[in-house]
Image (cartoon, rainbow, N blue to C red):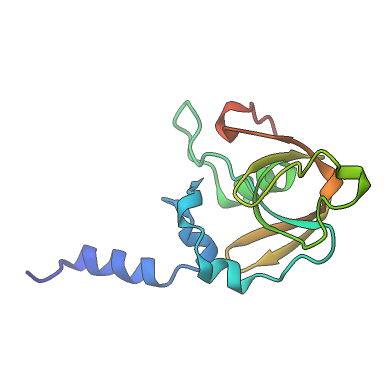
Length: 149
């Protein structure tokens, strides 16, 4: 059966997405199961004791039904204190300071200080690199944290 014009448009839009855009369900929520090797291979390797974080991106629509603009979502992303751990450097959580083990590992949601780390842009979004001791807590469900921007 031939595709309709709308199905062809959707297929084209999907194929044009960047690896980072593909990990967000409907462009809104991060789906950790979609963080694939193509995205991870395109990112730099954190050196030493550094950790690479993908900042939490909030909901596009408010509870009242108002659609937020991309600019607003970008500001929220800058102000967030939650993120998804993409990569961990080879020396992270080693040495005497971390005798109880690592505070987080790849695939964890974590909380960090608002101004912690360094930010850099990639196609489709922003990534943060933090030192291993800048992680404040592990978070089982990022949606459970009240995000006030």
